[in-house]
Length: 245
Image (tube, rainbow, N blue to C red):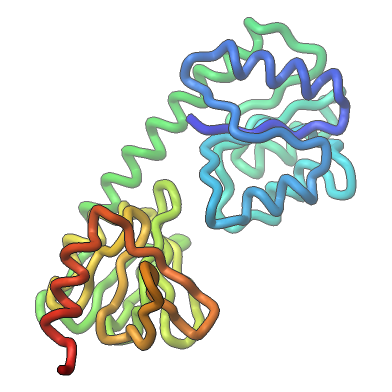
């Protein structure tokens, strides 16, 4: 599980990072002493984070407010010098709450809960993938998004982006819609004559492509979708078939 640690206390941050690095199931991908920088990292589409260890009293914004600001937060373990924020942490669905100073044994107990929650989240993802429906006439799909079932017309999809256990549908009107699905499942649902996977993390609507620049597809002049080596030949075959000479 990829994780980050956030704490404005340098000594405490060092301890958390050391515990993470001693734990085989965890991979430390970043650490922060500032919550604003951590939020920028967490909200970037380029970064994948499964677990966050965050102090409730971080700089600028507190850890509680940081987690509240995230649309789809990872699993969260709060750490704190007091238990004052424990109730708020519980309401946010935190996996655990560690009071400083805590031992490696205490940390390990928290990780067991994290691993259980992570597995449960993955199972829910698979279940939701199976329960999502695809309308067979190729005009629309129904997906679950934020506890609602949303209909998406296929003609409105510009491209689909993978984000860890989630996918984001980017629509023509600018709306992004998130759903707990794998990009592989979405690829299987979408009609092959209209949609093509061009990268590990992207599926594009072939009818929406206006510009191809070297090894990337350009949407709206400022959105660049890379075409990876794995999918390059198939995409080139599509271009050759539709290229006017």
